[in-house]
Image (cartoon, rainbow over all chains, first blue to last red; front, top):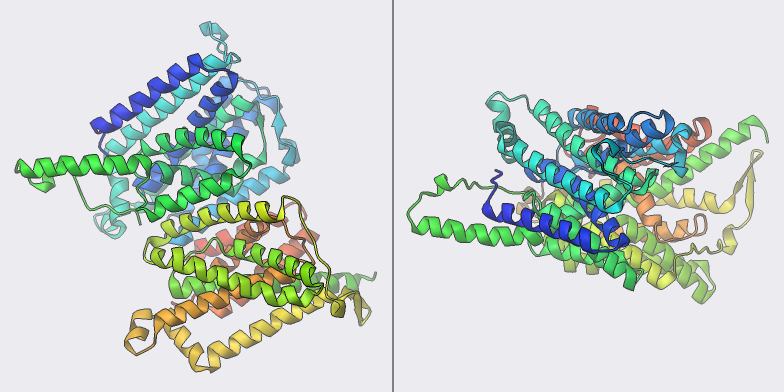
Length: 336
Length: 289
C-alpha cells in the first residue's frame, strides 16, 4: 500500500530543489542532462505505478513513451496542429494505447504477461518503423516546442524548458501518488497481493488493470511528448524494446514499489551514464553489473533499501510503544 | 529461375531459419519448463558461440575446430553462470530472473565489443559444404542444406532421448512435477544441471553454425533473442513438440512474410505471439496442461 511518508516527501523536495539549483548554475549540457533525467523519471514513475504497485511488469513502456512522442511530433510537424493541442493529444493517445494493451493482456500472468506486453510494444515499433509517412527509420525532424510566448516565456530558452520538464516530473509524481492513495490505488495493490480474492469480492479485475495501464500510459505519453520537444526529433529507436528494458532497470535500481525510488534511479542513472560514458565506451558493462548486484543484494534498490531500513526502525518503535502491527498499515507485500 | 524453384528456395530458407531457431529455443524451453527459469542471456550465449566458433576457426584454420569448440566453451560459460548467479535466482520469481539476465545481456554485449570489436566479423564455410547443390533443378547453397540437416538430426536425437530413454522419462517427470519426481528418487537437481548444460551447448552450436551465414556482431544475441522467446512462448514452455511447432511457425512466418508482405513481415510474428497469448495464454503445446 502507498503511504506518502515523511521520508518520501523530504527526498522528493530535496531532488526538486537540487534540480532547480543545478539548472540555474550549470551550462548548456548540464541542462540537457536535467531534461533527460526529468523525462526518464516521468517514464520510470509511470512504470513503477503498474509494476511496483500493480505487479504488472510491462516491457512496452518504451513503446508507450514513443507513442506519446510520435503523436506530438506527427501532429505538429505533419499537420501543423497547435502544439498545446498536440501535447494533450499525445497524452490521450498514449493512454488509449496503454488501455488497449492492459485490457488485452489482463488475463496473462508472470512471464506470459511480460512477453505479451513485449509483443504489443514491438508491434507499435514495427508499425512506426515501416510507416513512410512518419519518416520510417529516419524519424521526424523539426518538432517545435510549446509556444508559451503569451505567458512571456520562451521554451527555446534551455533554462525555462529544463524547469518545465522538472515541473512536469514533479506533477507526475504528485498525480501518481494521488492515484495510489485513492481507493483505486488500494484496489490495484489488492490485485497484486491476491488477484483471486479481489475477483471473489466482486471486482472486475481486467477493468482495473486496464485503467491502471491507461493512467500509467498517460504519464508515459507526457514524458514522450517532452522528450520529443527536447531533441526536436523523434525516431523509432525511442520505441525499441531495450528502452523498456532500460526503464525497468532504472526502476529496479532506484527501488521498485516506492515511487520515489524511480526518480532517484533516473537521476543517478542519467548522471552516472554521462560520467562513465565520458571515461570509457563500455557503459553497458557497468550498468549490467550494477543491475545484477542490485538484484542479488535483495532487489530493494538504492532508495528502496533506505526506506526499508527507516520503515523497519519506525515499526520497531511503534511495537515498543505497544501499537498493534495491524494499525501501522503494514502488510505482507512481495514483488514476485 | 522458374516460379517453382523460387518457392522451393524460399521453403528451404524457411526450413533453415526454423532449424536455427529450434537449436536455440529447445534449450531455452526445457530450461523454462524444468527450472522455471527465464534466461534472457540465452541469446548472448548464442553470440558467444558464434565468436568462439570464428576465433577457433581462424586460429586453427579449420571450420570444424570452431564447430567443436563453441558448444564446449559456451556450456562451460553456462556452468559458471549457473553456479555463480542463476542457482540462487531459482526461486526469485520471473521478474528478478528477467532482470538479472537482462543485466547479463548488457555485460556480454560489452565483453564482445571489448574482445572482438564493434565491427561484424565473418568466417568461411567448411570446405566440405562450400558451393551450391542442385536438386530437381533447384540450386541452393550446400552449407545451408547442412544447417537444415544438422537441425533435423538434433531434433531426432532429442525426440528419441526424451521419449525412449530412462533419462528422457526422468526429464519429462521433472517438467511435469519436480517435487513428485524427487520423491520417486529422481535426482532432479542433477537433471536440471545436465539439461541446462545441454541447452547452453546447443545455443553455442547454433552460434557456430550461424556464423558463416550471418557474420558475428555484438548485438546478434539481442536480435535473435526476441524471435527465440516468441518460439518458446508460442510453442508452449517445456515441451519439445512446442519448440518444434514454434520454430516452424516463426521461421516460416518470417521467411514468407518477408517475401509476400515485405512491409508488415516483422509485424507478423508479433501478431502471432499476441494472438496465441490472448487465446491460449500458455502456448500451443504446454508441457503441463
